[in-house]
Image 1: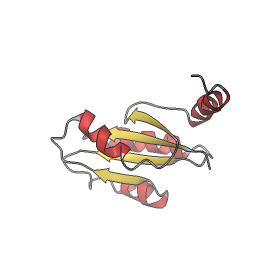
Image 2: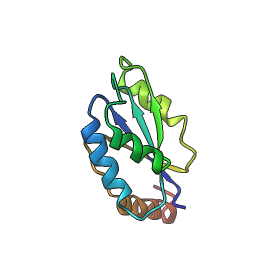
Image 3: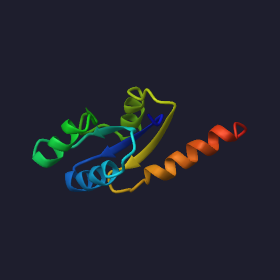
Image 4: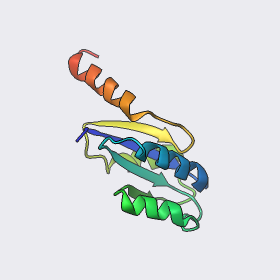
Length: 111
């Protein structure tokens, strides 16, 4: 298993989240995903709910009025891997590039 987690923050954009999640899951790489969601209503997208459930994605619901910095701070508490990347629901992080970054950090401890 690759020792990294991607935290995806989201707020009232289930289509963006769905697109990003499909993209990340298209990679044949084992990593963890935590969704930190403070949307008003997340139960409207059945495809998204199914994707989360079938892929063991960790879904954390936060109050809709929570500030993003506090949401990130709370979501980090659920990270159990050595490395973590923060990603918004409309940003696309390439998991193979994250692995390259981790390998660099492992080989260059002074960074």
